[in-house]
Length: 467
Image: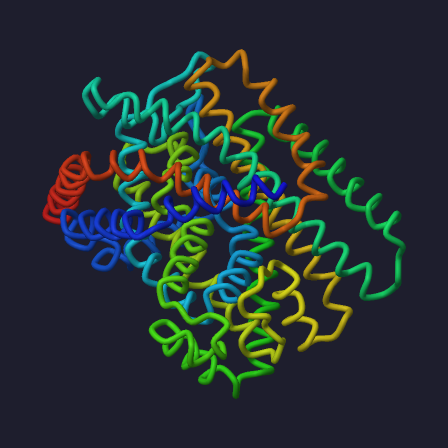
């Protein structure tokens, strides 16, 4: 295990080093420029398009899901443990200032994800089963010349590796943390019983994941469109309760976030003294949470029943806003206002966020937080399972899909017993590696995104004039 940690640290430092930060920022700024800041000037339209049509139950074409089911499947993968354990880890290692850099990455990320979704719809195709498939590997293959096609295969290969860490191991690890925290808050259990409980949780998740994912895209969409609104509302209500109870501490929390963004030393007592570490953790955990720059969310959006790439792209803006600006901020405020002790400089996960809730509500809330986090993590496991299937299908054909799903589900059992720090570090590394081919493709296809926005704007003007 020691050699694995050392090897991963070396790769992680390179992947999330200065060059990676520059690439993410440059691509985000480029998309904002070519679309004239569409995430800002069309923010109201994006909210109206998404929230206004959230419960539209229209019939869909064969091989598609509703736009809302598509966004729920994507949100299932994005609104997850990154919002709970990821934010906690970012604050512990990067200081409160990491939250500020999460916000910055999200503001640029809304445009980046918009571009990913637009390209996914623009260059999608149908597979042998009649389902629409898309994502970075497809918009690279269908949008760029053959000399760039190696990026599509690289993305799919890295995606297969990433889903086992990001989509399975980290999620189950967080479920285990939530459930065991709830159990230990009421009673003391032996190490043997605790190990058995962890393995049992892994086995249950393994069975449920197989049951749903083997049912295909329609079943995933049906589950996520019911699960996502419930879990998001439950978590937001719980978080708002903590914020309201500790309302006097909110201004101080925001002051810590802004001050520590540029001077972590002043807030963390020297345990986190590097501004670069704050930026690194904020950006990397922000991307882990909202996936803007990874391209994964666009895989789910490719199956939406829509003829307008830009229209579906608005859902991408909505995703990042809800995920990072709303839910991640609430998690940060729960931690920073509740009076919980933060072990700066040490790895932390869901237990830090849970402690924030317990400090405010008492130990009984661990039951509710366990339910909420189980929903978060399970939904993420489903979303990333779909991403993995699409990557496998792109490389090897659909005959390997079921074999992959069995392996993916079995990792749930392994993830239930792994060390949280190692799991999150590996997930960070794989996410960074996945982002490279996607960011290159976004840079090269920025003109196509601009053309789609121009076409949409022109059509919108014509409709306004005709009315």
